[in-house]
Image 1 (cartoon, rainbow, N blue to C red):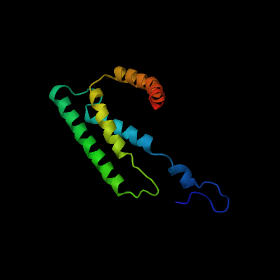
Image 2: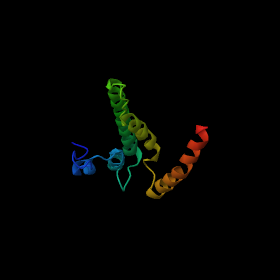
Image 3: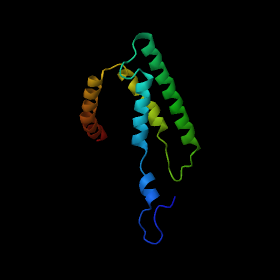
Image 4: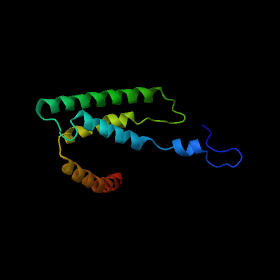
Amino acid sequence: MPAENEQTHEATLSWTLFSGDSAALFALLAGVGLAFATGGRHPRTGRRMTGARVGVAVRALLIFALGVAINSLMPEDPPAFNILTYYGIFFVLTIPFLHLPARTLFLSAAGFAVAAPVLMLELGD
C-alpha cells in the first residue's frame, strides 16, 4: 500500500488506518486466549489447572521455537526481529499467575508497573 499521496505528500487513508503497531492487539488477544484456555471467570483447579498450565508451557515452547526459527531465516540487513520469541517467554512467565483472582492480578500488575521502571533504571547503570 502506498504510504503517501504522490501529489500532496500526505499519508493515504489506507496507511493511516492500517500502519499501526500490532503488538498491543497481539498481546491483548494472547491474554484473552490464555483466559479462555484456563477457565475465564471460573479458573480451573486441581488436575484441570495443571493440564492448562502444561498446555500453556507447550504453547510457549512452540511459539518460542517458531520465533527462533523465523529469526534465523531473516536477513541481518536490515535487522528485523519478530516478537514470537518474547511471547514464548511471556507465556511461561504467566504460568504462576493463571489461578489468581482478578483483584490479585490487578494489584500485581500495578506493582510491576511501578517497580519495573525503577528496576530497569537501577540495573541499567
